[in-house]
Image (cartoon, rainbow, N blue to C red; front, side):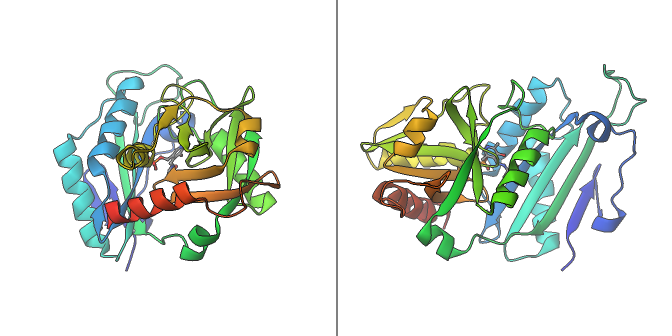
Length: 279
Ligand code: PDD
């Protein structure tokens, strides 16, 4: 089945979807994006992703060309056309095509792109065993809450992950854990689930919100505050959350064993709750 592309209102084969070299997304990274996956063919938490797309657009003074209802229609249509058993939907809105100048004009029409590809869920054995992470200095800009296509720091961080042959890197800024390069990070300390607070230092993950709600439903105390790199190493449990990773135990960070070196009881409970929630 071919991957589906959507560009400025029309569905076309992926190879035919072309954007101008003067697109500001290409020249300045002046754009925003979302990644949504399906469960049983239905997009998960689409409303929350579209709400975040709106927030990112507002933060960058970028005109969002489609309403939530229109986006929902296009996303569902793309998933239908791709006809995969599970899909990954990528949405990108850039400020549009204009002669190169850092400052922008209100006249520019945004470029809207969507692709729908096959989604390959993580191997269940990874979930059972947990994964390894490293830490990297968080060198991103001051508005990590905006899901911007400016991903250079994340690109460099993920390259370190590849070179180290681990699963993810946990970003640390001034000694404090912010999040993963493509995920949010939670730790368990004495039964409390702790994660970095929403704000300019992290992307507020859609999965993060779902998992915090699940923790509350389980009666687990939660705290939204930063933990130090030392706290991370000494945590009872560490796990990642995200669209592509769901709830995933981290059992080793920078070569140091976390807890018992296997997915802990709270991570397992939340992973199971998450599976029931999406199923
Ligand atoms: N990224 N933090 C960062 C920096 C991320 O890039 C992501 C997801 C998350 C998790 O957010 P959510 O639960 O809404 O997926 C947190 C996507 C998957 C990506 O860039 O491909």
